[in-house]
Length: 304
Image (cartoon, rainbow, N blue to C red; front, side):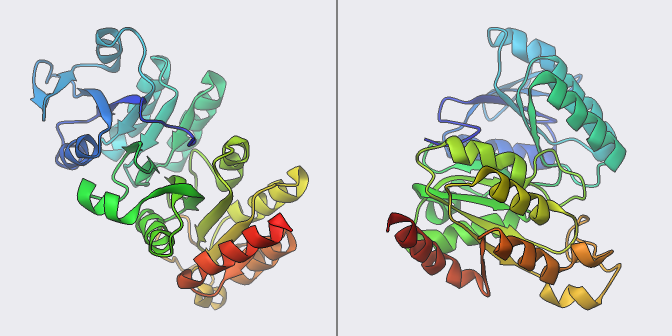
């Protein structure tokens, strides 16, 4: 099994005629994704690699029997909120937002609407989701050949604030003979549609996920919230995390890579995050290469 998407997930790409979206279309089609349409106002009647283009999400949904499961949003930041809302208002339940530099207030408003509609937003500023050998939705893994090399089907879930490190962790697991169930690039902005803790119920319910690997960074409360969730729900899943940017603890107000990685107070520091996670039973690796062995150790302990 997998979470969020399967080989049967049908989705559209909003902004499909843009340069980045054209590349996403090719990469996802080559991996076997079912892209059933694209949206660019004023471009109806065209196609991108055989994918029909519509003027609106409503038209795309109507042309596909009145129901589409997902959408990738790849439009300029000033249009991103409107694109998310348009998808939500037309019944789409899974929205992957690859656009970066979307105003925080607009993201928060879209996430609130998604909750009201029973939908889920991944991102913004993310590379999307992949269930290896089934489907990918976004730029995660890059071209299909590279994706197949890095990602293999298995039982380890992956969550990462960094898109590139999602693939780095998956590749490290694959090289060690550990395949993945679903990998999610949640986005590097301060406000994202879905956090680690909010993904946990999905992984927890997936019997094919036996453990989770996480790539984390300074800034924000996401790791603290994850630790709280794990303790409150007595999670069955062993979790191994890698914390980047430990040098940032002495550099308040500085940014480590992403918009959401600003250390403003004690709770934002890597040392505090590591402490919280370890108190919740989450193992923290010193190096990414240690993740596979730590996962094997945790799985072996769980069987005793």
